[in-house]
Length: 341
Image (cartoon, rainbow, N blue to C red; front, side, top):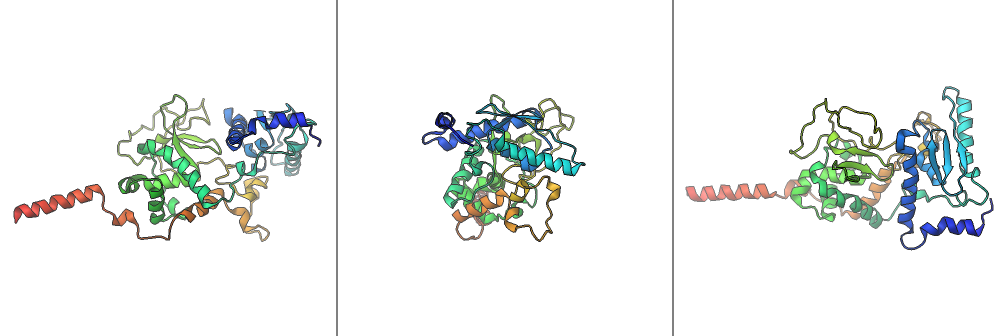
């Protein structure tokens, strides 16, 4: 497809200079948000997720219509019932083909899609993974009383030991006392794409993923802080702030599972096989043709790189380093013995 210089220059003008990556990420996120707002794009197969459609410049107008943000082309996206599988599969294949083919003649998106790293987790040097880990963790420390309890078994599933938590907390300048309080939660969240933040003028503290734009009120979960105000199950506060603005969900407090709370197509959990399947049900883990590498989720790729910044595991300081309270207790005991003597 020919692309004239004028159209290409117009397309690239927002991505010039040192901040090009940041601008491209913001532009990509803006397109993603059009699919999420009003739940316009739900129950679609991962192969045509918001991320994949946005990669080729498409924004979501409604559940059956996409529009290119650059050339203004329209793409009809009807979806037959999945029970009619042959028709369903043919329809999806046609839509995927049109993600490239339906742009206007001079539109650059077919030959210059958004980078792959916005759609799937890239392999990266350990220094890069540490930078992004700290970029999520540092802002979260401002809201440390809102760190949620992490569901049992998650730390082990992520391949993180206590010594890893200690070492990563040190790299983030978190002292031992705080590491004992919320280190496991803080590290687990940052290793799986989550940040604690506020949104706009709202005073609620949210657990947010920048990749899939999932945002959940932190108090929908059990918090580590003892100051957490218990919320009645009859409360009418929204547990999810951006997914269902007109729906009210009653809170049922649970521990936080950082993997289950991502959207299914999020690069933190979706695998390469997921992105090429018409539905999750098509994945057959027993298939001999399945490549093991195609089943690696993004969080596993990221954590493998991140742990390259950590020395060989040492005896956990969470257990061997006394806290301030323990030191004071020993001092009080020694003073008591001295007085008795």
